[in-house]
Length: 102
Image (cartoon, rainbow, N blue to C red; front, side, top):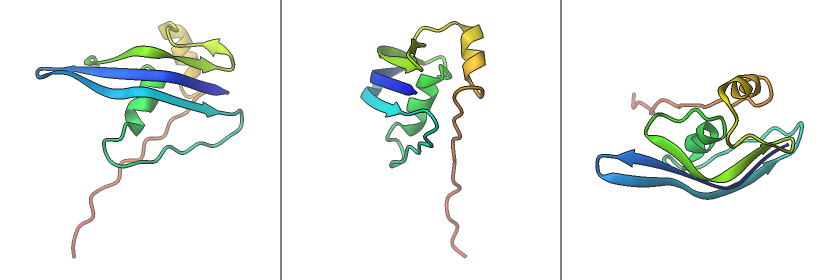
């Protein structure tokens, strides 16, 4: 089971701090297929990248907990994260192309 509680992620920009996620909570049961949908810019990808610690350098998880099968992986080391990514958690990010008029 994956549990995310009060996840907050910020991005440091030249114009200041952007609060990309501000208190995301979700729970995915074992064996459950989960789809995260929403409008462009709503935080779908940032949620996935935050959970898997794949944020760019400007991004930072500033609060919240991420638990996998009861194990707090919020501050997991790189070795543990490599075991998790693709082995225990898989994220498929779909990027659609803009429609083109014919």
